[in-house]
Length: 135
Image (cartoon, rainbow, N blue to C red; front, side):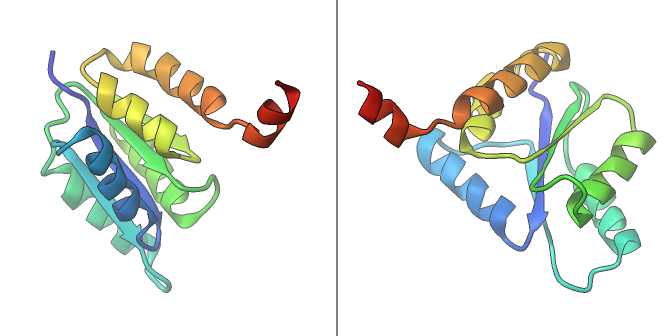
C-alpha cells in the first residue's frame, strides 16, 4: 500500500508555509499539494484548481484533505470535492501536530489515519503555561 495523497488548503499562504515547516522538521515530502485561496476567487475557479492539483497526485491509497477553518471558502470547496470523489478524508483546523502525524504515518490505511489525525488534533493543543505552573 502506498502513501495517501495530501492536499492542504488555506486562505492566503498559510498552507504553503505550514508545509515548508513540515519539510524543515521531517524532510522533503512527496505526493502533496497546497492550495492558497486569494481574496475575490470564485468558488468554481477554486474547485477547478483543486481538481487540477489533485490530478497530479497519486490518490490510489486515498487522499487526506486539510483546510484551515470550517465554513470558509477552502472548507466549502473541499466539501464539494469530498462529495464528488470517493476515498477522501476532509478535516478543518489543521496545525503542525496534525500535519506531522499525517506525514509520518500516511502509509497506513485511511481508516487508521482517521484515528491518528483526531488524536493528534486533541493532543496537539496544550496549555503549556498551566502545565508548567502545576508542576
